[in-house]
Length: 312
Image (spheres, rainbow, N blue to C red):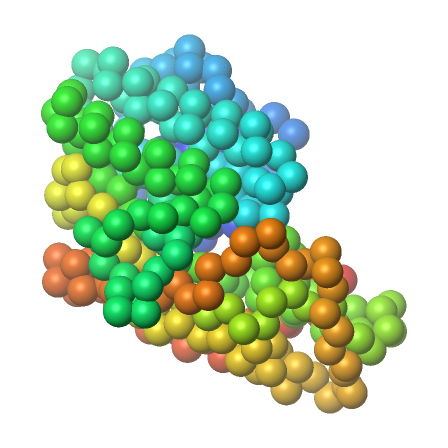
């Protein structure tokens, strides 16, 4: 039976990925930071800081996984603007520690590096939907660190003959996501309005931006398929292939509530630089694996709103 290690499993995606591995008959192991909480019902859990390379090596030697998913990241664009050094440390130095640890093993596991659709940055109108071989023009610090991770991963794969694949995951959403992210933020605010703990005003940022939203459960299905059949050194887009205006998402969330809700722009939610549209071309992934998203965005929004109704 195959074994998989999920590095950085306490984040939003980790629990969903562990469940998907279990559903595919793959034994899951997981890491988290010491202060994080991860219930070990479906995986054996270890504490790990990826900035400590020796600790990464020790865990790999103990588990000897066939598959490694590198999820650990500082993944908030907003936090990256406020704390660029932390973002660089975790997303670049931490990733190199993982790659070096894998390179030093006595066998060759398959490693999937998780990147972001934000890496493409300022996409020209004629480039939409964006394919994997398009030029990268990162428009924020988080995107720049993920683009760097991708480039280093490509170099390592070729230079050291590593069985290493990379993804550029576009906006993934679903129940349990932190309210740092736009869909979850809207749902949390509406849930709090319904409970009377917030005035009936929803605070928003740039509603004109268009983003490619995919349910996290579809995303982890793609990850598991790629770790099994992805080609070494290659990058794959994971997204819906259909960008939606943030305003459309907001309207769907508000329509699911019976309250009268006003919308106000919050200057603190406006990014210093915001890319107008990000939309994935998922032909490469679909051709290789047959994967395509199956969960409609309306279902994801409703389930995310219900999550916040229970947890606000």
